[in-house]
Image 1 (tube, each protein chain N blue to C red):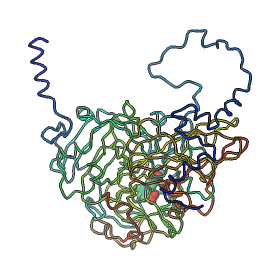
Image 2 (image 1 turned 90 degrees about the vertical axis):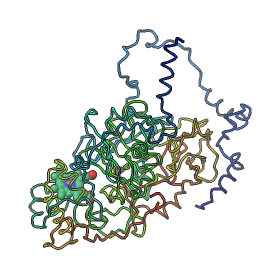
Image 3 (image 1 turned 45 degrees about the horizontal axis):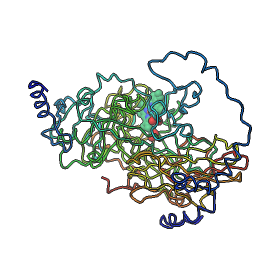
Image 4 (image 1 turned 180 degrees about the vertical axis):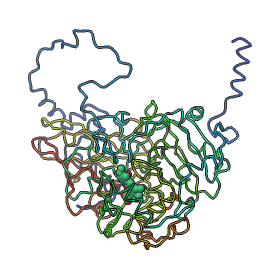
Length: 180
Length: 442
């Protein structure tokens, strides 16, 4: 090996980072720094205590209008479901007396924030993220109202939505608490 | 059916081997003399009974072959090896493509056959524009691209991915007459290559109060699941390659979260955002779809683990035993707890058992193929398998499983329904005297 190549090999060895036991100083650190402000449009995660809920509000009556225009074609009148393949019922739901009881918002969901979050990220199914937040609050209020989980006059917003008590909320058990 | 504790099972198995047609694997792996002693001699004599014809060259041995294509395809004779589709016409709803295990061998599911579930179609993602951000309870939010991740130390491992709803037809109170793939087609196994999630989380600097992260995909519904930080720091990967090539679009292109051994849906595909949080998000998929109703009406949530399971792939419904004699009972076993330690096979509906040979290397949270040589005497038989893992967990017997998890009160007729999820009891196949195979409960 020539002197030049030997020298090169030495520099190469010096710049090789031991992969085993990667310490943070040796970590590649190639992620671009970004601010929470830049992530805001993507940051839609909503937690059951209301963390992440956006400003805005809506009522049952406002939601009925949104529903008729943007949801009914698939979920059918009054949330009965079945207007399109796979678009299930948004109302009703029997007692959980069989392992295959159809799960619904009323008989199954633990938190009303889940309804809001799912609609905001995925509905209308054919045009996701087209609803302004006020309309998401309104149509959520409409669905919760149809299920008698809130009154028809109740306003849904970042404060009231997490307070809605869902019937199945306390009926869950966690099989693996030690894995959290 | 009596339920015996695991130690009782293994102690008994070898005594009983001699009484039945399962051939002790040690005989086959080792001495040829023992093999003949186990009765194989008689069986092969039957096979060679037909007179052999003189050999001649076939057409393909006499002409120049076809052009080698850039991307190779399977032989046209294998055209029936395809995933089965729940939504073949692409209706605007969820869709499932199931792996036909009874038509495959080995342990790695080919990418073309790897199962897919999409809740809103498969997104067509330009990898140059895809971004992954890590933020929330971290010191410094970070953004990664495929290019930057490609410069990281890469880890390669095998892992199965299994939908919580895999094997759901076995919750029917009557055995459905469907193939192995129709029952178990929502699990597949691959070699994955990617970057440790812990490396990226450490670079972002996770706050000590953080307990969960919520991972989000770039699909039309931004599918979102909560994953415990504990698991994320343990063995989760951001994977870029599947069996040596870039991820299939239906399996998460250009990058997915791999959560080895946990519910398939938690392995978020097309992952674009990981938010570190102090409480789970109770997203739609962990609240409704991937949560289970128990007998008595209680419900499970965050049922992460895919428990130890095995199933026979050959011979099963759709195969036919053409004559008595030697057959190799083969299948796969896997566990979210770790490695498979033992697979027992029975050919008499669970009355007696023999220990199967485990093929190749036995990998953590991965398919392990098992073999059990068997001499079929032409009489009705019921074949079944039962696996143990290194944590000591074993597949519960059906009676035991059903008493804990329930079954439907009416027979299920649609194999695409999910009466419940997380079935990990046994699967049994009944063989009649004509060699025809039916799905049975034993």
